[in-house]
Length: 254
Image (tube, rainbow, N blue to C red; front, side):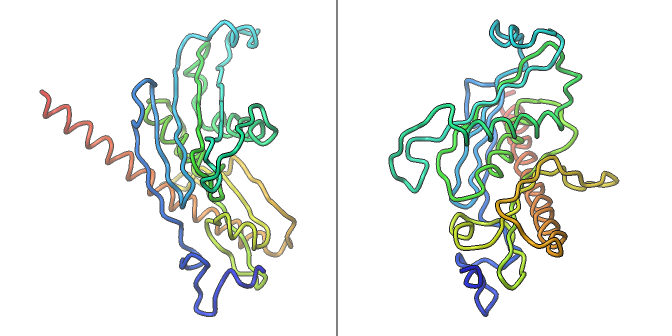
């Protein structure tokens, strides 16, 4: 039941407060045979993202892009065999769920990548979901953002994703786990360019799992946006730490 998601002491099932993120760990440059890569652990959801390009379009991609001048952005997502609760499952290619994730990722990142710099070029984003614990699309978006930055792709801003939900008592919960998704109420997922300096926050993607009352819209929306801003800080710290390590490594080698 949704009312059981928050105890009388204000604690959730996993011990978090209502406005706390799950554990997040991330690393850049985890793969060698690509132009950019990243690993993201969000709760118990684990994702690896890799980037190939920008490069000259392959023959198949060029045939699909008849105009020839457009930026080609290919996205491929797959679930690992043991991605769900550690149990072996059949890996289904071209499933409806994977197709929806791939289309959403294309739309999200085409809105933030400076595509005018990559005309007549191809960029391939490959995602492997190693383990799932809710909010897969959020972890995928955040991992892909890191991989694109690791590859040196020009973007308007970081794009970060987070979820929020509501208890029966109307309390907004930040960063919903799989168990909370099952037991709770509607879940809102957003991907946004967080507010930085003079730049206002803008939303690139919104998904709602169930209907909810309009009076609760601002509350749950603001909660998810706050999560995006918190995640941006975590991604920014990981990027700066990685850059610092690379500079130190270059100086040591020279």
